Image (cartoon, rainbow over all chains, first blue to last red; front, side, top):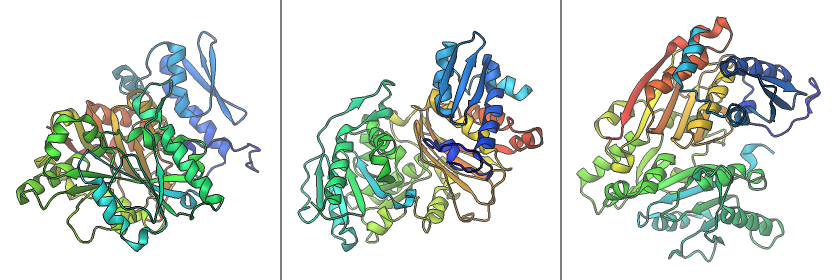
Length: 99
Length: 358
């Protein structure tokens, strides 16, 4: 358990393991949520932290999925959307570049 | 227990008749290999009586994803578990290293997947390196006729060019150059070199703090770049494969990079054969190494120091049928996800070299 955040350490995903910024786990998670939401808004999806141990992915329809890490986020997003989430999609890149 | 405390596993792969068993036999003569467990799944002619041997039956279980690189090799898992259990119970000698020799027709990705994801295996073992043998005489034909041979060379950390005494010096030089261009982050060595031994092939361990800096330097051997442009033909099964570098002038945002790479591998993991790199990440004084094979990414780790005076982030990709310019643009766009003050960092990205395999 992280003494500062009160979070139990679960399965550590590779995106979590580097902790390059040397910040508390909860702070790193919230920053990840914020950056992921800048991508997900292109698909009208949103991500939120759930108890510091999971993420909740929500669609505009109200449908939700709980995911463990950022890698599990993308298959879940594709299930909710019914179409691919492709980082090489020109429309997505245009949107990110505009923002 | 840290990653460095886990038992290293070296995967020895290579096409049929390319000299895997001969190389293994040679390595096993070394006293340094005394505490090595060996798993083989072809009946070879190696005298292994004095060593620990596990036997692998050809059994695979395909997971729901159906992707070949995300297939669990239950035979590999069961053999490693049994070996470890026997050693713990004192039924065989303890071992401090494992070598798995694959069949010549095997795609190494499922074995890598098994080592990295099996809940029992990954708490006792870690993938240390992938070594692929390439036949200097028949290698070109094998690459042309067999997709697995191309895959084996693409995921390797060490490429051992075999039968160089039977090939002409020109053929050896050509194959050497093609391999260096095809997999620029792998070290290519000649099997006829007397210096080939456990230290050269198995000693460079990414998770050994004393060796990882030198290993990372070898990934990014900048002298290979221009050379790679001259020789890049590895046959029709490699015709749609490209290797290229991306270079970032300014520090990257690690969180944004993780979001981008997980998204890329989710959609295109089957076509991203290999990704390796040293990253200069914002907020860190030391470089961070990333290393992935298709959908799998090893836990990243920090080096104690930069291997050279160059502080640029460098990523090496080996991809199948993907456009480097689009990948570059995508990573550039995702790097702008970070705070506005950091957004300018994305402007520093450039493609250093692109090597088409035809």
